[in-house]
Amino acid sequence: MPRISKAVFPVAGLGTRFLPATKAMPKELLPIIDKPIVQYAVEEAIAAGITELVFVTGRNKRAVGDHFDANLELEAQLVAKGKTDIRDMVRNIVPEGVSCIFVRQPEPLGLGHAVLCAAPAIGDNPFVVLLADDLMQGDLLPTKALVDAYQKKPQSVLSVSEVDYADVSKYGILLPGETDDSGLIAVHGIIEKPTRADAPSNLASFGRYVFSPEIFGILRGLKPGAGGEIQLADAIDQLARQGKVAAIKNPSRRYDCGDKFGYLTAIVDVALANPEYHDKFLALIRDRVAKDAG
Image (tube, rainbow, N blue to C red; front, side, top):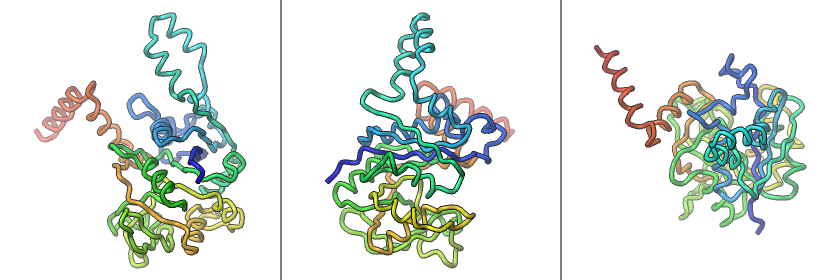
């Protein structure tokens, strides 16, 4: 069985919900304190054994490549100032043995189209897809859980979580089958953003997936769906109806950093989890709450 070593990061979106901040800066580089959102996803992939990172970019996304590329002038300046610890941190954003490939999505034709653009770099190999908007925190992160599930049973696997039925219209919702002893859920279909009345469950698919390469053949044959775009959910639905998709529950906490409040929540929780900031930040929050209440 081939080991999963490749990951796709679709980063071509415009980030309109964060304008004007994202007018000139990719939304994936918005920081959670001092680390861009996309770097968390990259670190998650590397921790799961991924060694080839494929970024699907669009116009005005050169800065994403610059972030993961070497900056020899910056490194030299840091060394000259005696800041070798910071130099090492910058140099090791992409560790030795991990490579980056950048592929252009010529038009914004949907998530399914973005994944399809990565096909030449993936070849006939299983691969992971990570959406950087979804920041995951916890002892076990979903990419590692997905890779482990694929190694046990090679098939496409989705990371899912239960959501309130009032929110099912925001997500791709599973038509689930039986759950086996290992926690693997059979997926018979997926419905993109159903109404509450039409939702077959409250299991929502989020931004972590493992795919077998046959997904590319399905994507090539898809006609534009919702919004006139090639929808990844439509391709997953076709695979699922052939009995070739499973799901596992997301073992970590997810922050939707494509949403302003989700992004703000991530910053607060990451700050509180950091020993350097915890005490001062908690005191600041308590002070502000007390002033607001008074």
